[in-house]
Length: 334
Image (cartoon, rainbow, N blue to C red; front, side, top):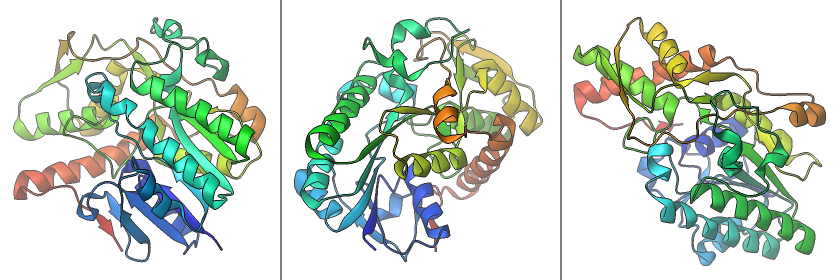
């Protein structure tokens, strides 16, 4: 069997995807990331692990050679605090997808997956916290998140034209806020679920019963647990459906409700301090799952409470270990 390539395998989603493919019995796995191997969130000794810079065409050649399937999860990105302040870095990720597509065409890759984002959606449709859930057609006319969203929307078009012009079988998922254990929870690139968990945990450990919330807390989002993301990703790659499609939960909550939930899990109540000058993104965003249910008879089903309990427990153990030993995040190895 040809090799399955996971790009961005040292990151959150990529690491979980490698782990899931191993559980299914795949042994022909190649994991690639720009970060040193010691910094990968999950790393497995029975996988071909390569440190490569996929912004470079020659490194994409090395990564893709001999592969039948490519999952492109690699990007320079983070939560809203990162993407609003690093637009140029986010845009440079276009080199990764472009060079991977060139290599995929060169080596005759059979299936190519690109991880897009709900940040591609038109900002005018996301001004109200009581947002109408976003359908796939709401990406046009184009007015995506500046920087990161534009890169994702452009790369979606690149996938389309490599499929239409060169026969590369591309598949595109628009992820809506993926969360779970073995991911970034501090340092500035973390997303809201992990950030809230960390803030609540530290407030509890330090005895300072206060939490800073970016924005007024009324902004709405949906959050998809990693297990649902993995199932949706692989189902899409192995299907005949070629258009971009939402892969996200439709369970919408406010940021205040997310904090309520984490406080309940932690068994604590905190005073809230709202930072209205901090990056907060759009006022409202939710996934319309009409299409994915029609095409696949499925949508993400993990309840936010269930996923957040698992995420909280993992981050708690990591914060506690760092607090007591000054260590860094554990790398899952086997």
